Length: 143
Image 1 (tube, rainbow, N blue to C red):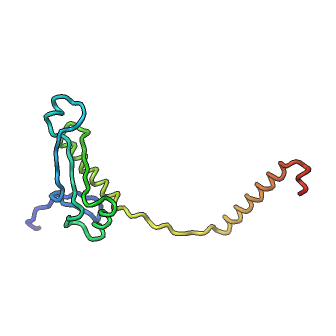
Image 2: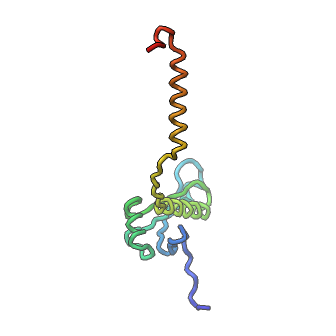
Image 3: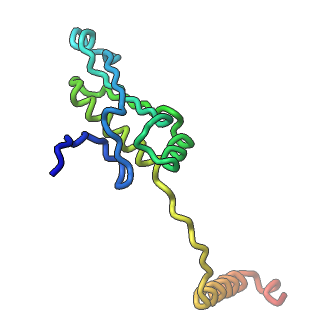
């Protein structure tokens, strides 16, 4: 077993883990009502991740994040009274935002309708045309 201590990481996906020391934190007072507590406690947590200079990103990961989110990703949380809970919420939001930006949509495979589906479609069209033809007045039905 190695003597190196495990570095705490933010696990975004199977292929992307960001060491927590790459994140920068800022704490401020929460806005809005709250009286004495809100005015003196810095419970709002803001976390920043510098995409452009992160050593933990590969070149394709960095380019994808730069294209979708920009050079710095900033997330804030101020919903809770506790700074600790707001930190956890901010980390979770950052993880979700990074995971969504890294998601690659699967390419659509073009398919053609089967012969049976084509036949059903033509039968339905014929049935509908007959139904409408039968609704016409007799004078026009001979056309």
